[in-house]
Length: 264
Image (tube, rainbow, N blue to C red; front, side, top):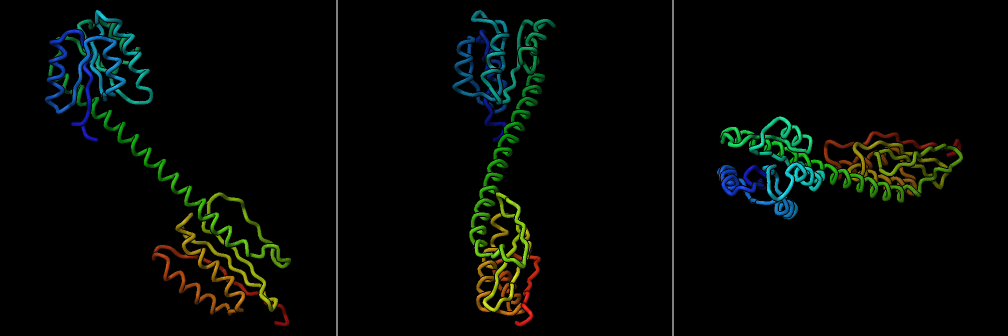
């Protein structure tokens, strides 16, 4: 979004000032709509959802101070500056407007240069707020996607590691419960000849990126155990798998152990 797509709602019971303020805003490529009464202003505010409001608190149709409060309440979490432009420019009125939620105060007749300066400041603040809100939404979305990937990776690898013989009497394994895969993997398999094959590794990254390498290594590990492959053969095969599938900035640091009984 840029400044040219911003919308200004002009609330004033006098047509001449509705026209003057609208002309000044339109000269800056702002979209404008006008309201002559408090009731019309509330309807337009809710239906059109402007980015900025200029408001004359003196109105035969109601209390301008109360309208400020109603507009701020209707805005909810949206940042919509309210510029009070009024003939009633005494300190008491200005104080009441600010307390009600107004963001700026100009006395009529106003200076066009000063009006444009104030307008630009408020519009930049609104633009910054909208950009920050959008970036925050994007971050929340990406965070939710990362968490989803972590859960998927955890489920996939948990299923693959079900074949790991953690209950072997020769080895004690402690796995910390986690909702995401953090790159750590421990595999144990007792071979037919009684030898115990162990793989303890840590992949770079978390979630799905880490599971890219962990899943095929898990499958290769159990295949190597069934085929009674040597440590050097397993290491060579594992490296070949990782070189093929991992980008050059990812790796796995690991221990690969083969514990043999004395008679093997």
